[in-house]
Image (cartoon, rainbow, N blue to C red; front, side, top):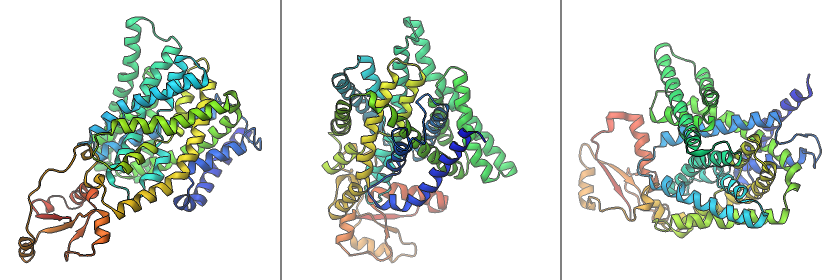
Length: 491
């Protein structure tokens, strides 16, 4: 059996077994899967035990990284499309627009002065390191005591951040390689980057989802094969868009978004199996990148690069978030929490690998610098995710925070407008009727914990989960709940 095949089997086995054994520890301790598997790559690399030896241009790394990024983008698009962004328009506009470009500018300036690189290389570094990683953020957003508005803001940003960063990076790569000249050349290039890939991806995603929904209704398709079909859509979209000259990654995102927003009747397995597959690919990617980083990090000046990491983590992200959220009706604690958790991880490494494969001069230096910054971020954010999330959750239970009262879009709208009010005596009479209203206890977490008074029969729903509760109730009961009276109360 070829040695490469044995190595591949061994790496997959390591990912599956170590992840299974460590999952319980990761959920409780200040440690994350990226920390474990990136560290494992360092240990197995040439400067560790020397078990694995390969460079950034290795075919295995390219294949795994490509599949991983395409899967992650597609799945994040499905999630965002399913959640819906109605009322949340300020989040992508501010965090993903001005916020991202502020971060790019700060990191690029720091790279230019600290690493003594060209303006173009500094912009490439700034763009790559502006990407946030949804993998590390999973340890943050699973803390249910954190208000939904904050968790949702982080989820949306992590899921869509690359759709701002990736086109910018592709244009910078084209500029570095002089791929376009003149107005006509740049017009064609921008059209290919921004339009061709997304259009192809949306069309394939919509068509493939429609075909499956029709086939499932008519013949009944086994969930196993629906799951495999979802992975097939991602790979087909990437291949076709790339073959036509578009960007396969943007196409993968557009395909996932099409599946979600067109609301085809696909089973949940479509998403569940894809997440399982992408999870394995992501963890394997961390090992492979750990091997590569352990070998090439010596190509960058270590102390200046560590200083760059501090600028990325402690200055660029917090400052940008403070600026774009300065008018948000959220607590300072929430603003600081969102500003801290913008981890750099697998996405940045995958984007840096695109620069390598494009043959940009100095690309290996860029990957080495990104690798150092990502390593610092993985450790800092991975170690702080659990304790800071729990501390924020406990703070929310002790006192009311403004972000609890609003959904992800409402945090930019100030206090809620006046609502129709019902007097307690009137409510008491209503509860004695043949068809009493449904009473929702929507007090904030701190108020609910401190005041043990309860209205008999009231349903407890945290204020930031009301919209989610209503959506789930509608999906479960449909038209049966239309017209039912609901009374929500707080203190």
